[in-house]
Length: 402
Ligand SMILES: C[S@@+](CC[C@H](N)C(=O)[O-])C[C@H]1O[C@@H](n2cnc3c(N)ncnc32)[C@H](O)[C@@H]1O
Image 1: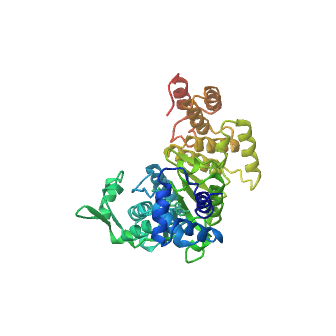
Image 2: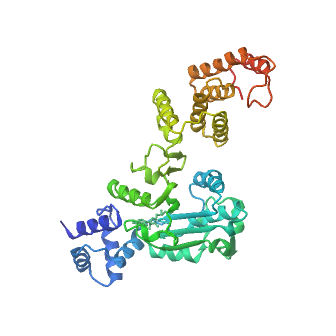
Image 3: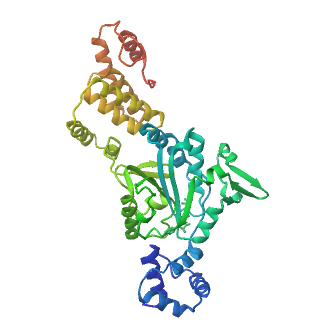
């Protein structure tokens, strides 16, 4: 094995990076790093590889020279939207007023600051919350920039206007406002190392871990190691957020992953209807999984059916028609004559082009309405009588029912 190959192996083992040593600038960069560390290339190789011990100084020097630290505020905008409109409401529902987030490979900190701004802007009593927002990176230069909280216009490629009030403009730079700055912490950490040393001071695991645009150089084995290690410090029900740079490697394609256009969220140990979305093309399996799910604490109450219906409406509001479909199937398992669930499901299926199933559900609704007393108000229909709703359904031909 040549000296250069040994350096490559060293970086792979200690940083997880699969660096191309044939890249034209590799040797020049190596020379610069060695000079900075105070020894020639050969000596450096022998010293650092002989005992294969991770030397923080060497790794930091490599990270400084090599890492692609590009970052900007609100990068992967759909992720932030999901954070604001799905994760925050879930946190508020828990009523615990606590949140711990770890931004792994945070670079100069823009993503963690973006989350802090959303929290500050969305939660009125955020000052009363127990927050632990930690950003770590293997590049010490990036960490010191994050800690400074001072950014240039390159960090503002897609910052929504409403968050600009959290910056203080000063000549050509923008400084993070003190109330946001005090919410976050940054420090050195190599994601190949023990994750437990990053846990919040109270020893609890994280609610949310961001691993966005980090695994650019990683190979699948090392990426898998990183995934396992991060899941081990994630709370049950907590989220790991990644991007195409990560799930493109192929280790993050978990069955219950929630794919957004520019991000992917994986919820730890989340066994629920969402998990079955993967089965969306296999209706028989869905049916049997739903039945199994319902086997457990079997509370086939009317309230259950209604809550599934409301959950479906909520999903639709968030443009998650697959989630809505599953909640509606769940509701119909509890009450096969649930007219509004048949209508809503029929409409979703119609929009998805699944015309045969859509017709089946709309016909089920019509049959049930036909057999109801005409003056009876249809459950959850906002006061519409059976005869009126039947008339509406019958008068719809090709168009969609809203
Ligand atoms: C492209 S930046 C991504 C920054 C931010 N997450 C974002 O999406 O905007 C990738 C960062 O990952 C860091 N990184 C790469 N390998 C790492 C490792 N082994 N441990 C910790 N950070 C690492 C790099 O130093 C770099 O700052």
